[in-house]
Image 1 (cartoon, rainbow, N blue to C red):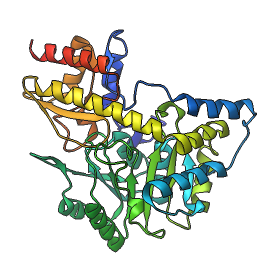
Image 2: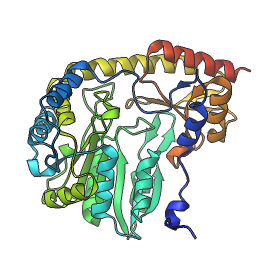
Image 3: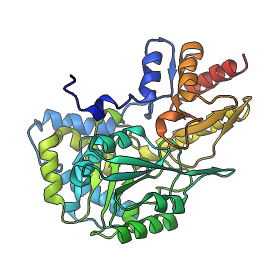
Image 4: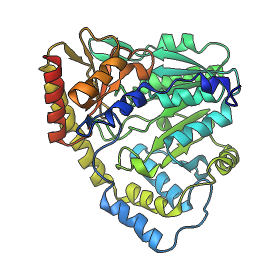
Length: 384
């Protein structure tokens, strides 16, 4: 008899992890699997954390993050979106996924339904399942102009019993970004039906036609049942720091503090000083990094367009390319084959839920030479 809950035993590993297990044992495998850049955190951020560590900032701290970091985040969001946030709505979390878990623990009851707009990062949907929710996937529509939101399908999915609606914008893996009009429609629907809206905005700065993607913070009232998740991982190349933030509805400060206390008891103070530097001094790095991603995007799009049987989906956000290969329906098997035979690590679309089953995801937040070599290997494999 297993001591593990049946629902956990029955939960499959992500196909991404399965491909990674193949790729990790191949010494020269070029991995475009993980959603992170191949540059280290910039020196000015590392220096701020190092200085705090040297100054002995190694003690327990406030559950919602040190006041200086919460203030820096409020300043940053004011500059970016023109919004004024009360301090009690802001919490620093131990990763973006930690913020997801806090929302699940605060809102989901066993048997609730969580509607997720897919394709989407599988870890979030697994978190809903672990919390006892039934996950209803509602895919984006895919047409000649790329991804689009099917508002009517989302509204149909949000049937009685729906507790939560999850939307990521810009999205992983699609790069799709919600428009203000679409966001207003979703917000109006969740208000009317009493549904919690969770907005994942982790890629808010990785866009190519503006300074920042639209945020639900621009339209949501403080008392709306809207949670906004974000992370330091992407825009400031801080993935290994495991730091995120959560903006909650007003009046939930005590609840969030309680949950952080019983999960992680708060984060490391010296790391939070690095995050302050990122927010206050990091605009030059964000601009450079987005430029680097733009170059990677151009390389990958140019190379994929010249490959036989390949069709890329146009996108304007995140740092991923999604494409199909004519004749490939089992992307899980295909990506393992690429790892073993072409020595390239790519993510199978089947991992991201409905709408991506026959697609492959590639992270282009990498150096130009690495991307060119990876494209050479992919093209050679497809022309065998």
